[in-house]
Length: 169
Image 1 (tube, one colour):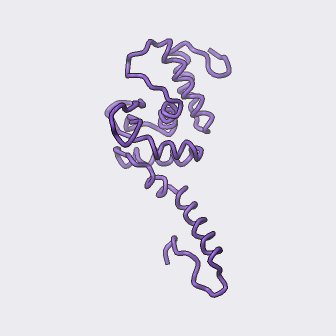
Image 2 (cartoon, rainbow, N blue to C red):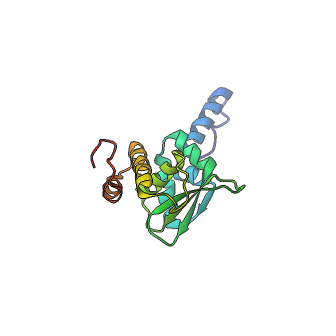
Image 3 (tube, rainbow, N blue to C red):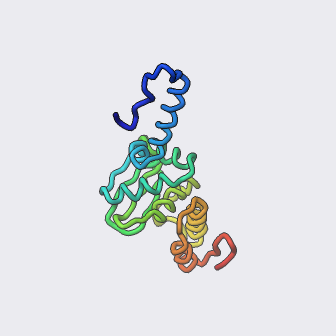
């Protein structure tokens, strides 16, 4: 008997009980690593990075997780860190998130935050004084989702000379 087997055909089990149990089992699967992996439509990465992405998405609030399922694809690139790109072409996804092979959960969450906050800007085409507040907003959103982005906050505060949410610069 596998994990998705619904209650037996016991004469004492009602149809509504079977439906409730099936829904419970589906919700359990949907929130599992396998369920999250299945629902992310675009994972063009190594197996190791897929695991990091899936674990990150699994930790997101349900509305953000659904946003990722519906609008984001992930692509592994040959550089460190990450970048979120808004797609203007007629593709299935609105966002492509580029990630280096060593990206951790904090970086993945930070890049998802850029998408969630609709930070649409071409690579390298905004001055630092405009990019800094966007980076800090993405850091603070990822932090609000429970990810440890303090190293990124410290780095961005130094690079962009912008205060964090608490006004520290």
